Image (tube, rainbow, N blue to C red):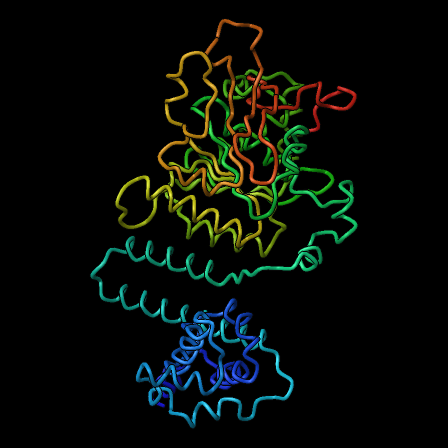
Length: 458
């Protein structure tokens, strides 16, 4: 057929025999169709004749009709397509040469794999043509490539209903861990005991939004968590930090001062005694040994983050990604409005977290609404700035709040901080109380939360 010749001439990935066996096997065993239909679509077939055959099978199934050669031929004739698929003789020959023992799910997986490869080839060719023609800006082409590749990655994930026994079989740690909470595999520990207790740690594939008004300490808290993940003596894991606001030197200075418990003001001014210098040197060595990686590009986008993380994940055990902060990110190319742009960015980060199976801690600004409220200035979900989709995409939304910021002359509030868990898909909401050490710009567990009360573990 001409369509087959075109596929072969272009050298696009395809396996026509597997496609034919798959269609033939459905005619032999129509009961298998629904299982196959959950794995692939008609567009996954490489040639038009096979796409037409599968489309008419779908229509027969949706109409509650039995699928066999007679009903399929009748449906094709009704649409004037029988000759387009090679006639009745081609329908009869679909199972010619098919193995006596066949694996329909594996056949469907091969068809789907080749389909994705073809889409990647065609998408790449289209990008090359657009880049050569020079009719569009490079930013527009990059933006299109970014959205196309993310869409392809999402479409490649085949989800289906699972029986409870299959879900149990896939559970991390097996049935014993599933039944015994003490043995259950938890997410990445943050170092904050009450936060870990309420969340079970940050889990792979989660998008965690950490939001606050300026000067509340959201960057400091994110860095404290990042340091703990990378320096956890029980299980140190790599951390990637993308800072669109602060330079890598400023971030390193913050981390070293927090690790050494040395005042940032004294560090900047240089008024340090011998003990403080010793602690700084020791803290710097500890930080440098930890697998912490920083990118301070102020123009980084989803595509660049994706490329950097894929490379890092191939070299290290990636435990956490921090993005500081969402509203400073921009999409390449044209967008209708800022809300749609932020929505696309939050969705893109969520897709990356799922693909890389790594928690993403993404910082976000809040609107001024919390500051204009009379009485209680604690933020709420509606205060998230510029897009309601941030709340929708996030698995967890937490707000940093320090009441002392609004009541500066109340000495009883000094150093008191709250992390408000406003949303959590897989756990409770509530408030985690913390201590904030101003001179070190560091959050710590409260003494009441620590067994023995002898000091924080982070």
